[in-house]
Length: 358
Image 1 (cartoon, rainbow, N blue to C red):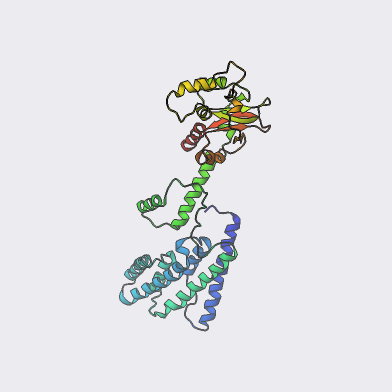
Image 2 (cartoon, rainbow, N blue to C red):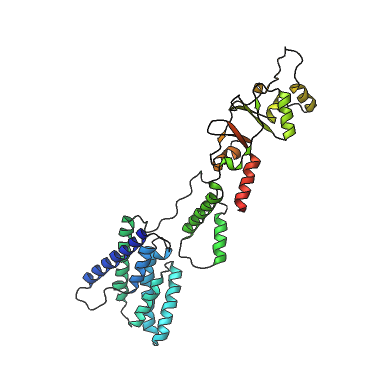
């Protein structure tokens, strides 16, 4: 078990407290009676209650029901099976079956059943005392101690994931199918297992993708134009480089806008399908006269509100911008607010693919 020293000390002191309280209460209740007041299986139950309080086998019903039902099975075997060897074997096996049926599988319960056979206990009152009494006292100690030391006992279901948490790559149906195929009893609840798998998936995601920065995936030294760049020149750059967006920068190379193919299409009146190419050429062609109302420079058609990212920014922070807000190109700036790169949807998808394959 990979737990720190503090957790180990917590468990050790918990067992001391639990068995101590159970012993004192049991001895006080028994008084001067010669009947046993503390049974050995409680030692094993204490390991579960204080060592693994999240385990399904350590929950109150498992401890109380498992030990008491198993003790009843053991006493029944003493009454009806004369051979002690066969009685011992039947007591343990039948106790396991009964615990399975009643949903209180508890490993120390097998010891309780066996104890009744080995001590040839025939009085059904032994189920109530010491077995049931010990189990209730121990679980009560477990509730008190675990609560005081920061452990939820009885163990609660895992809290639902927050609404804005990234979706897991496996569904509840996938987990159920895997558990059905595994077909073995696990010493962890289904909900805790699902949460543990999600934590592991998140850790793997952080390792391979979570620390990736924009500088790691951006296209460096991107083409850019200035406010006064002619439309025809900007369009030529986009065609030659086979790109769909150009950041617009000032003399200091600070981003002041962005021009995309959509801006050019709007200029050419995209609503009209016929003669689109010719209208686009006419729209971006430089005017031979000084008097014209149609746009001729990039600054006249560019989008002024530009979403930018810093080179040191985590790539994960851009996923929402691309997936939900409809961005296709995000300029990247350095600490001096100067353009140093650009990230496209293709860059993001490529980085995601590499992270999944690594």
